Image 1: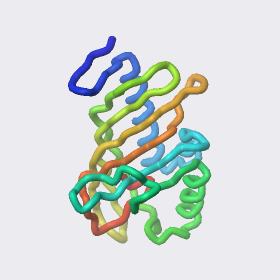
Image 2 (image 1 turned 180 degrees about the horizontal axis):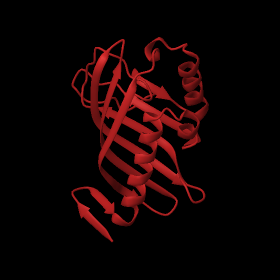
Image 3 (image 1 turned 30 degrees about the horizontal axis):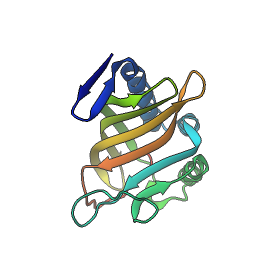
Image 4 (image 1 turned 60 degrees about the horizontal axis):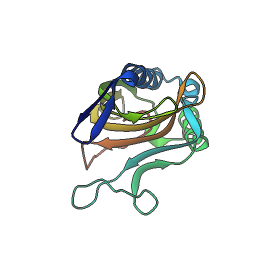
Length: 173
């Protein structure tokens, strides 16, 4: 059943499945199950946290703008995980504990092979170096399905805060 609200065309048949997938990704990050988390991403996946313009709008072209994070392949994500595991990342050493909370999961459009999903998030983290931090915003996912499981083609993260005195990493937002 489809329902149109504003300019979002909702296909409710995919919602529960998409939500379960997003919850699984969040749990893998919180439990630091890096190999399982990486397996959720397509080889050509894009992981993007855009910066904001002087007018308070997120940048729209990652190739022509400064980004908070812009990784264009699973191998780029694997490199990031390698630096986290080996302690070669100053931002991630020591590794904080995180708790991802995901709400308002909504499939904006989709079919049996590809869906676009949006969700709100809040991530609380704690480390000896920085203490407690809380970040929130919106996720935009593009998920594809080649077999029984979805995989992440694109994850765009829009933080609420335009300015932070901390850092962003793949697990902290």
